Length: 169
Image 1 (tube, rainbow, N blue to C red):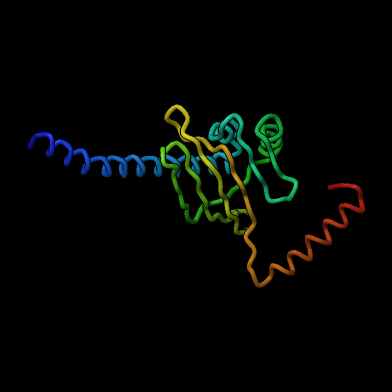
Image 2 (spheres, one colour; image 1 turned 90 degrees about the horizontal axis):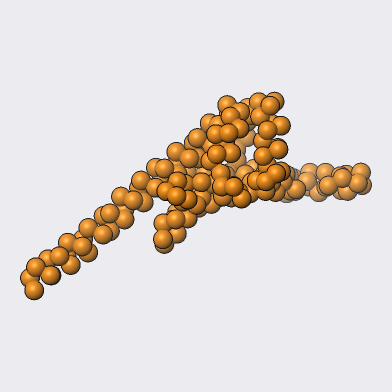
């Protein structure tokens, strides 16, 4: 009986520690995927960039029409953009959360454009597939100070109306 109680006690004490270690390892792995994703973009490395994503991934860009399913639209877009050089952001912080089963993670990161200094937020979802973390959904948003958001919205409204009048969206 005593042996059973000790075994149960050891299991109860070790399980949270093992889970925390796995979460920590997974968090490190996700940060590495996101960093490699950005590094591949900065170096216009198409294979490495797209290799960090699932086959059915979706990328949402900053323009309101930009919803890029991986096949074939995003692959084509990345190839064209990377032929002209990639894009370069560096992340200033990342926040990562996990599903209960530990196979899905969601994140947000603040990033700064190396080319124009603009501040962005990346957010999305990663899936653990065959032991590897892959980005399945990525959203890039432009950060706007609340104090100027009305001015920005007015500019967007004018641009939208101009585009609609020109027959393009």
